[in-house]
Amino acid sequence: MTVVVLACLWVVAGSLVAFLPMRHQYAPGIALLALAPVLIWMIGRDYGVLPAALAVLAFVSMFRNPLRYFARRLRGERPEIPK
Figure (cartoon, helix red, strand yellow):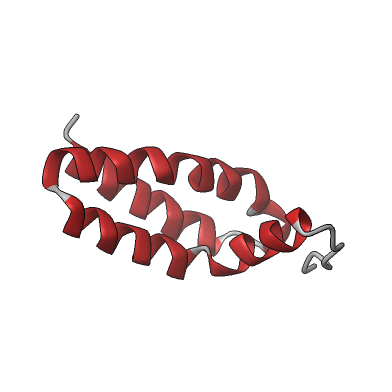
């Protein structure tokens, strides 16, 4: 599969996960969060720095709340998980 097809499938999967109730979003969301850096690296390898930078911006925009949560956990805080 090409990187573009994988990226499109990742976006579709992210959209489908967003439709789930919050309590069911955690496991697939973590999987998408873990796969994103690999996919962004593949985009950068095949298409260059600018498309990879745009992918990073889209990723940070889409996962801003989980990234904030993990940043707070790394600082030793105990943030509340939404219900």
